Image 1: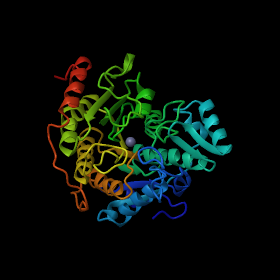
Image 2: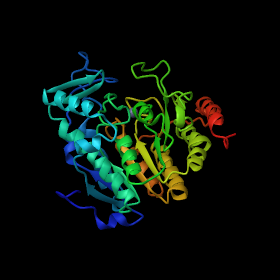
Image 3: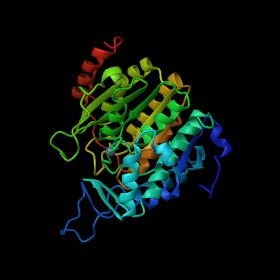
Image 4: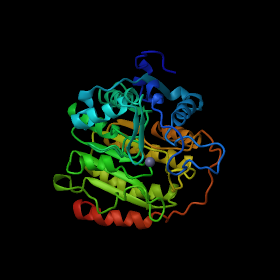
Length: 383
Ligand SMILES: [Zn+2]
């Protein structure tokens, strides 16, 4: 584990290690009791915690520390972001308003994003630790890094908290890489929800490609904004650089593989980024309270492995992942381990304790084919 103030372990530079950036302070963001998909109920004796809680992250850490690939992990200390660093994405007025709201005791920033009076430092720790992770990869200190932080960030827009998130970590990381001379950055977001915040931030930009694989909500859970359609392709110079793949509810390992091979891989190859940023959520698992897609640990291993293969071909192996959703207290943690096995190019060695569902390879095709139609309008190579 991380010692106080520990510097990056020298082993982290070794190519076959994954450097996990961690800061204990993110655990102090208190979200309280049940909310959302598992609301507080007078019928049950013991209330659930809010699904976005510190326990989920503690389990993700412990499975990585105790699981079979623990020797391939190098742990590194995160840090607090500065206000100036947040300003790379978020206007000063928004940052100040959030801080004042927290200092006044907190509450709901919007319908589903709660903060407590102690949340300010944890939010700075989540952002700063994400920046440490991207810095380590851009500088070459590690080739593959993972910012294990909370809350998620991909719903946060420039001046609007949303979906448990206040600051958009993937966007901060992309801007940081750009500021350090990385010309093209690709963000691949496989959290089960659409990363509407990240989309908004880069919607008119052609230097940051955003690709999201997510669940089409349909009749289920109308509470979330219904963004993320294949028709949202970007605007102006950004046209063609925003790629949404809406997979129907129930899409599993095979559907995600097909979406990757038919869309993610050819588009990223064509874009030729110098860095891959992964918005790594595990809420597309079959057992997640906040999602209705059906990935197993095998599916997350596959996503990690496909990312590894793509990065080896396109970015010289440079990958930096940041934690987004994933709300099943233990299975999401197992799926983080599976993701990291794949990112390291290792075989799937941790056994899946519960995952079995019959999988339908054609399940995602309606969403995949729609995205292909829109891609063919902006990407000449795409047929
Ligand atoms: Zn999510």
